[in-house]
Image (cartoon, rainbow, N blue to C red):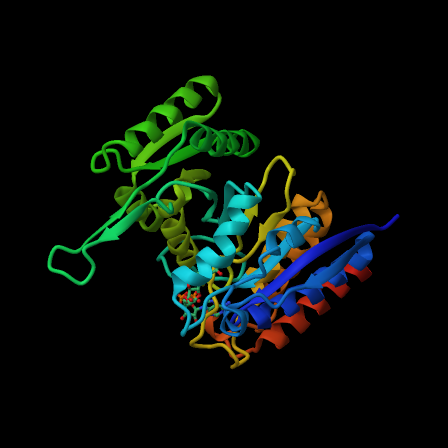
Length: 359
Ligand SMILES: NC(=O)c1ccc[n+]([C@@H]2O[C@H](COP(=O)([O-])OP(=O)(O)OC[C@H]3O[C@@H](n4cnc5c(N)ncnc54)[C@H](O)[C@@H]3O)[C@@H](O)[C@H]2O)c1
């Protein structure tokens, strides 16, 4: 029996248009051996679309997306369109309208990759960051006054709701219970005196409900240092929107390249589509050169397979990534190689075909 999924595909800008087709090839290949079919429905919503229409997506864009099982996105943002316009015109509305309140970002050192950190053994970094994805520091409340005068001021509010904090933390506690049972929380309650003590209070309430989870709390500055000095101590890390965003670029760096790092914007209840997009952006500096690493997008695709309930297919994709990294020299320049996006993709397809023969 074949499972068919309608996937809204938004390659977006820059290298998004290069890595999304690469990942689609890999997902189609793994799908064909696991009875999974993807109906890719592609949308050209991007900064180019904005230049043509004055909008990042059509007015009924969210309604159109809602008719799909999941959303597979490359990257959005390009010089010429301010980043807050591209982000708030497309990504943020999707994450919020579809209550994708968990942004799950694995930080795993894959076989064959050397961490830029000294003395990290193979398998020495393997944790998950659960980033709150709907509220927190990324809010629309605030404003500017007295523009262009010496008295000019800008106010940006943070919004933390009990419901919003509680649900993302519960997700993180559940995840920790399924793994080694350790959960770290990112705070800054020494400097941010309203929202962060509130965040800590809810974390402690939930810790009391989950006695089997070993909890720890770190101020964000110390936590960032620990990601570098002792990344092996982490299993699951829960963080607010801004802290999680920054931490996961650092996480991507310690596993070798931002070009590898995957991410999933999840609506855990499955009431709305989730959105799968790698951590990296549109990389205008290398767009069009064929040098984009497709592995972040492909790994993100494996997360989509997992979310759709196909863990074996997801595991096959991860095995293909590991085998290409460990057994072939096919690496894009961000990993010190000379291979192109398409050459790495071809190696992934070969690795998948090999496992098929072995299976
Ligand atoms: N989720 C998203 O769509 C998203 C995320 C981050 C940034 N952006 C947008 O992307 C644009 C560029 O942002 P930036 O330069 O800060 O971040 P970026 O992630 O695009 O690039 C940072 C650096 O990493 C490199 N890089 C990124 N992905 C790579 C890959 N797959 N392979 C090889 N190298 C890779 C780039 O060449 C660059 O040197 C901006 O408009 C920004 O707003 C979008």
